[in-house]
Each structure stands twice: as C-alpha cells, then as structure tokens.
Image (tube, rainbow, N blue to C red; front, side, top):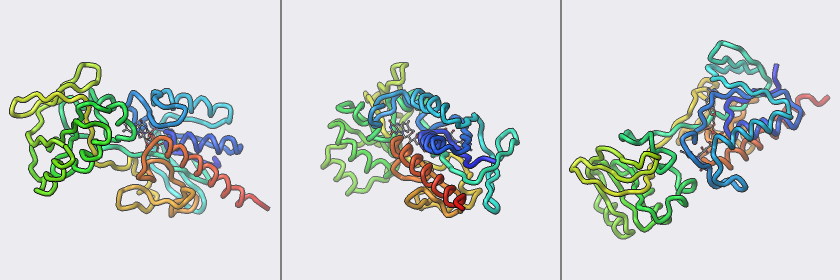
Length: 298
Ligand SMILES: Cc1cc2nc3c(=O)[nH]c(=O)nc-3n(C[C@H](O)[C@H](O)[C@H](O)COP(=O)(O)OP(=O)(O)OC[C@H]3O[C@@H](n4cnc5c(N)ncnc54)[C@H](O)[C@@H]3O)c2cc1C
C-alpha cells in the first residue's frame, strides 16, 4: 500500500513526487514516457533552465528523486478505481498497485495538422505556443496554419514576434469580410490555396510551403492551434468533472471532485507550460501530505 500513486512522470508528476518524497511519504510514479513536448528540441521559459532539452530536464528531475526513495516505473496505466478510501491502479501488464491518495498528472495531447512534412519539423520550426517558441521565430517569415476561421487569433497574435505573418486557410474559404479587413489592417497576409506539403532543410527547419497551384512560398516557421485532448481517459474512469475546454476541474490546491484524487499540470489547466505544471505538482504534493497528516493525527 502506497501513500501516494502518481500517474504521469512529466514536470507536474515529478515535482509532486519530489515534495512527497521529501515529506517521507511512500510514493510511486508510473509513467508511459510520452511527455507532451517530446518533439521539441528546447524547453523555453523556465527560469534557470531556459532552452534546456526537454528529455534532459526530465532525466535530471528523475535523478533528483533518487535520494528521496521515490519509486519510478516506466509503464502505462490502464485502469484506476476508487472505493472506500483506497485507489486501485492496474498497469498494462495487469500489475496492481494500491494507495491512499492518487495524483493524475497525465497531461494532454495536441491535434496536429495533417500535412506532409509535419512530423519532421514539429517542435523544431513548427509550433503551437508563441510563449514557448515565439522568441526563436522572431523576425522570421511566419506561417500560421488555420483552416476555416481557426487561425485568425493566432495570426494576429504572431505580429508580436514578426512583421511577416501569413495565415494559410488550406483550401477553405470561411473568412468573413470583417475578418479579412481586420487581418489586412494588422498587416497579416492571407493565403487560401490548398497546401500540398511542407519542405524543410532536412534538419527540421521549414523552408517552403508548397501549394496546390504549384507555388512554393518561402516560410521559416509555422504556428497552429487546432485543439487538444486528455492524453489518458483515467479522469473519466474515475468520474472527474471536466471544464468546457476539456481539462479536469480542480480546486485551489489541485483537489478534484473525487475524495483523495488530485490532478496537476496540463490535464487540469488551460495555461499549459512546464513551469506551471511543475508548480501545480508542488502544490498537489503539499496538499496531499497535509491531507494524509490530518487523517493520521491522533
Ligand atoms: C511541441 C511542444 C513544445 C513545447 N514547448 C514548451 C516550452 O518551450 N516551454 C514550456 O513551458 N512548455 C512547452 N510546452 C508545453 C509543455 O510540454 C507542457 O505544458 C508540459 O509538458 C506539461 O507537463 P505535465 O507534467 O502536465 O504533462 P506531460 O509533460 O505531458 O507529462 C505527462 C506524462 O504522463 C504520462 N502518461 C499519460 N497517460 C499515462 C498513463 N495512462 N499511464 C502512465 N503514464 C501516463 C505521459 O507519458 C507523460 O510522460 C510544449 C508543448 C509542445 C507540444
């Protein structure tokens, strides 16, 4: 019986594990090894670790947990249930774990544009978050991918980072007259032609967007925002409440609506950054320990 099972070993889960390990709790982290930013070369915007490789960041975090006796297992969790103060978790090999408290730090996954060349360049010169990668794309010829009306907000926002911004609607024609006027007023170019493929330099850097009419448009970076979803269905299995944006509802210290179940990081937040996820993990770690202390006090 563990004090706490943490599902998800990204920044949220690992930071929670650190606080709980330091509180001398019996903790296990179960992680399937698919952090949301695994395609990225750099992790930006985290004070003191700005620009660090994301894998290196997690490896360093995992190594730091060693001295606190936290168990780390590389495995995917299939099911989790809660009955009468006890969580029962089953992994993909049918191994069963039990705990008094459970933390879900399972993150989100992004909807990616279905474009040839995408996989090779995602996380290198194709991004979704300007706060994470806008600086590295500053003053470049930036493309924003947004079929129908999905790219308007992001195209306008990217003017913060470059004067040269083009919105690609990929063969769709849903922009209204007022959208086109606003984009023009703000100096955003619009390209409605269908995209055939993205061409890069072989090292992940975008060079051209090739259009159906044969045109090859030079572009050095691309941004998109097509939505995201939970990486695991464990929140649903456990009966969590969700917000209209698809993240799990939590209170100030990461409590969910299920007693003893906490949620931290992207899975519970619509401000999705490593530093926020890590901070929420720390908050959850302290809140879980406080709850255990109260239950143990004689
Ligand atoms: C391409 C890209 C680049 C980014 N760049 C930046 C950046 O530069 N700076 C920044 O601050 N943010 C960046 N982000 C956002 C950042 O990745 C997230 O905010 C952060 O990873 C959230 O941490 P987390 O711990 O909540 O979730 P994650 O890091 O996604 O970790 C969740 C973990 O849970 C595991 N998991 C999920 N389901 C299960 C299961 N059933 N069983 C076991 N384990 C499970 C996953 O394998 C994963 O390891 C980027 C995102 C993307 C997509």
